[in-house]
Length: 292
Image 1 (cartoon, one colour):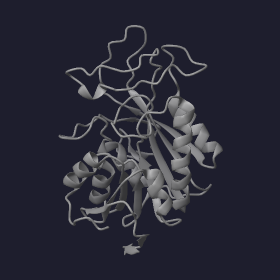
Image 2 (spheres, rainbow, N blue to C red):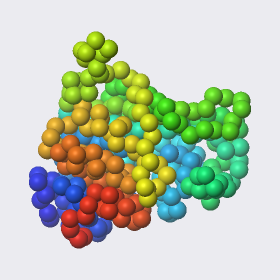
Image 3 (cartoon, helix red, strand yellow):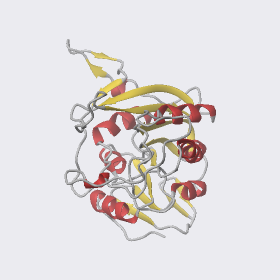
Image 4 (cartoon, rainbow, N blue to C red):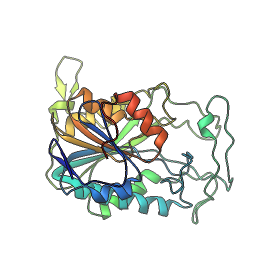
């Protein structure tokens, strides 16, 4: 058992690293690791899970590689049920999700020179009830499932990408947005509206709107789905205070950890893929060897 600035962690079977100032990285499947964390330990969770059917992380059992949307949704419900348990009663979840189209029963996807990460060893078949070229509606399927599982669905925020990737499609608009859902554990929750207020043209402020124009941001050496710090900062500002513990169960290259260190929050990130754990440790500045 280890007590780290108020966070109690049982001696686990998975490796835990300390990086930066009060940023812990646990390596393993978040579905297993979350179960070991104590109740009501975190003020907020901000995260971006792997999107369904869009990327191949090369890890057996990876979330996002399910053969149908229902399986993906159920796995995320299981993850965020545990997240809700470990949040404080006034805690919030800020969940970023992108949508996808049916594959037309193509079983793989060739990588291209401009975007080698697009290559995939698998592609889910067209789900029952949908047609080739259908938009699947994944973000709202997940949001409604979490709502049914007890979360308060408080806001849908549009992350508008002014520098979105071009698409070769000719029969629909180019997709240039994703969803960011604000959910709460309880009816009343911590939300610092002044901390994320928008400036007006006359120099005043107003309550933040639900469309956030934020550029995607590259990170050298990172994998293909980098969570931009500019998207994370307002979430952390609104949902926590300096010194709060923040959780990211899909840590990736460590963007949430970077933002937490900059904003004087503490963070626990969980990441399945060892390559990304090493990348996050380098990015955040490893200050210790394996803790467990």
